[in-house]
Length: 270
Image (cartoon, rainbow, N blue to C red; front, side):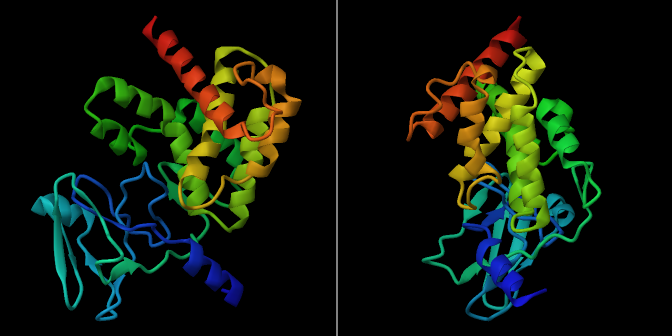
């Protein structure tokens, strides 16, 4: 790894802040896999202690499930987290922090999809946005955790966009980040059709942008092209008002996403 690449992953590829989680949630074994945003209750697997300089040892998902709680321990401290609890580390009060996550080794598997240089990322992202995400995907733990059916339904509608945003964060600062940006761009401009599938694809592709921009990992790949997409393809986005007016892009995006999700809700209730 070059010195520049080493600086990048240590500076940008870290949980902000790291989570300690009970057995309800997952702590991935792959060190390159980390919490992707505010919607992702994944536990950090790269916690280190600044006092004793040791890596914090974490119970695996299997051990945590058997014990009913997950243990975290270094040479000078030990913490246990139970059930579906999520403990956000307060970095002002603790010596534990995320030690950053290395770049992923390509190819890797995520929820049944292989991500590598030979992968048709447009095909993967298009399929996911149109509903091909398996129920075993980690994002659905977050969906099912919500007990209110109306909120659970909204989370399920947004889950494919969150999944794509998670993938974009995981491969950030690699060749795949640009490939995902190109795939999202293609989803937005390939058609102006207003049939339900085309409308759903564009709405969920749009949702990937504010999803990634809101969190602390930086804007979604291809964000800089989004305003031009909306200006040049207004026929494909009839639910967005005034896409050209400066300063209104984020508000328009959120209004568009809510509009389409309300349409999806009413359509699914028929």
